Image (cartoon, rainbow, N blue to C red; front, side, top):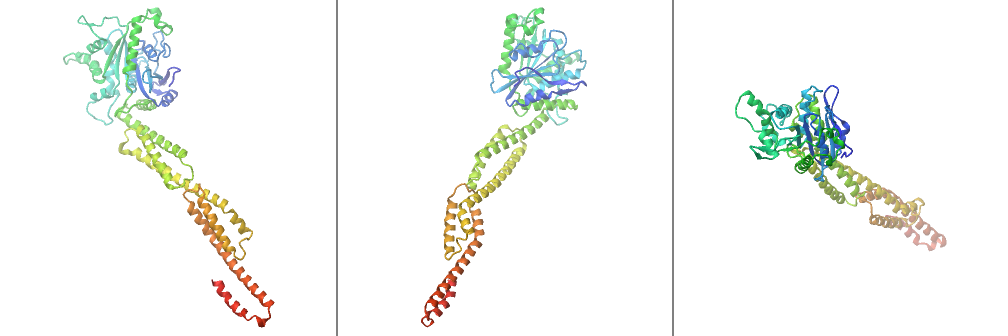
Length: 512
């Protein structure tokens, strides 16, 4: 939210074209809450900005200006916390006064009016005096909306008039400096009845009657529900020149009450900005919509609600996909400790986080035709999971090699100093290898490649074992030969008849 005050959202460039102010757009883009958007339109110098300041809960903010020159240029925005709906942001749009003689360009007024209609969920039309034929003729912009806004994107569609009312904002007519009595045929009436009576159509087909009926018919067809509030003159002319400095105590009590009733109505009845298909709009979406509509107008296109929804759906679904993917990645990073002992552990974590990611996507996605973006998300999650699985394998291999290096270190030392190169050395080697293998299998933190890495290590040691076995056999044979020779040297040859038999059996010992 931007409680510091209003900022210009859409301005006129020197060539007269409308453009979005980037810094204001960024303010909107940061609002993740749903928005209630109230736009005020009306002839310049009719006190529009005062009403918007009251809605913002302050006397100052939107420029009031006491001269005849129009104060508000383009469309100004103020984002404030909604006073009733705590989970919503109230976005106030104050539009440039219509009919400003300094501009001398009706098309600018038309586009300002149509943008107010496109962006708001409640449209406040502000006028002075009474709702008479003159006032309704001044609201001719409403008769041109069908030329300025399209509902469907397909060219040559049938009359869309019936569709407008479903997607246009609710309409509030604020009549300022109202001096009449609210009566009809001498009977008291409400402000709403006063408005509806002013919108009654005349019977007939003459050019004059058609012209009379046109703005009334458009208001009736395009905007529902409609509301009306009348305001008496707030103070005398001298006081009016310094409205920003005045408190409620300085104003007419009836005007203060009427202003409060108006604000209470807007807060209570103002609906969440919603698009075709029921998409509730967040501040971020409103920023995207603003940019889209202004771009369409700048390029000479007629803003289209259908096209805007399709474009918005693409933006939102891409964003929802990235948000869901980021959640999955962050959650897996917190949840998974590498290496996992089993593949099943990793698989269960993946399944759980995948469900959460899909739920996040479904909560934020909109009009995902043929589940295009959901399928893309599932593919992206599978790719991330595959990468995690590869990392798990690599981490397991590294861990296993570290554990082997530590546990089999004594074996390595004994091999190095030749401890096993003795008669019977092979038996000792096998016993040590078996003991250390058992110790390795009991160790934790090895992961999914525990047996595979052990097998590689043991395979590497096969040739070492064979060498020790060969050496053991050779040394044992040599030892036996040496012992036999010692026996012959110690006894006379005539008494050593057994030696022939002994040496004849040596090959048999070797084979065994």
